[in-house]
Length: 239
Image (cartoon, rainbow, N blue to C red):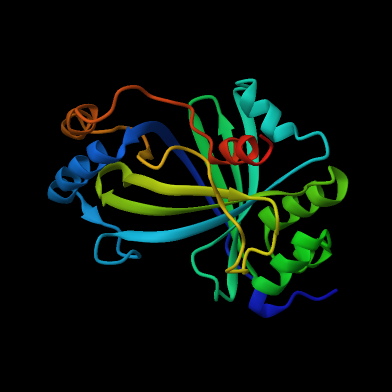
């Protein structure tokens, strides 16, 4: 089968440090004020650097990725589709791999039509892409029987800093559902996964995180946490 020229693309593969914290709404508001003074608001967001995200997570018939995360296995992965608006013609296909303290995200872009086929369990169209990531995902879908498990929605406030490719995000209104896996449906009944006044703070960087930003953030956070939106969502809808 020939490759559709529109589907030839370059995969993205990034190794990063990733730290996560729970932060109260009031403290997050205070922290946002300081981050705006030191960092740049995400150019893809609105005036506050905020944007909406929806992710659909997949897992195998044993729920291996969920169990590995819950058991604290150092080397693990997550497979997801991600969109930033319901009218999007393209979808991010992502494998998020954890190797000890490092996170490596592999991503490719597929059409919304192929995303819908993948959600239904038909993944052969992924082989039409000139993409290692898409081929890996085809293998997981075909051999390891990966299927949709949970949709996660949230709003993200994001800041960037040019040194070490630093990115600080505050995620709020995190919700989950498994009632409908059509990620383009605007009427899915979503359930909150944590308290309304609790947000998730994430810090991503390549190698070093500057001391002055460490001091700024440490003022507003209590303790580091291995927060997983995927696991929070699975736990919420299975209560």
